[in-house]
Image (tube, rainbow, N blue to C red; front, side):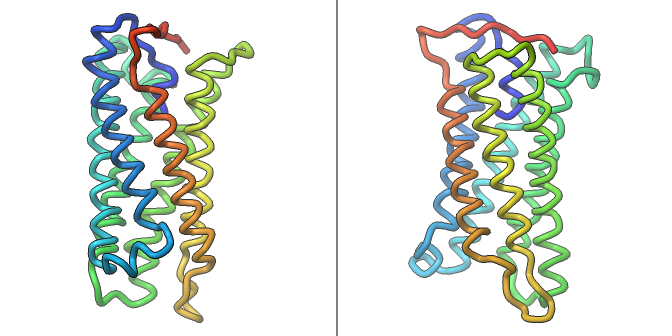
Length: 218
């Protein structure tokens, strides 16, 4: 979805075939990441179920990112690995894999503080950094020439989500001396607001009969 601001296919049939499942995957994943950290959810469903919500969201992110990477590769096969569109999609996909890893580990129990920082916080931080790089690549190309079209708006809202995920990742560091999270409120709200931005981007990606976006070449 982040790199999708750079890759706009040229007809309603193609949009229906690609953009809808990609948008749906990111929308469902975003809802999971919005619900998971919301105040009172963990108390209502329990830590195990709350962790499963995050893990499910990461899986939907990965499936959608894989479809986007495949679409980008097929449409730009002659330029595989050599333009910002492909790199944005590929880096985003790697970020989702790291989210799979940290959300899966977060469902486990019995970790000490050092293990939680290594197995959960570290892949979360790196995955968020990958999202930020992917979002910056997409925004740079979408904003080229002073454009303020649909692709630019999608890139901007997704970049905001990437920044918020990064803030959340930093804030969720567990301080070894105290065994507590650095800033629990910032971690939760950063995740929820970042997910809201990604959901907005997914809604913007969903094709409508009235819009047939043009492809933007980097």
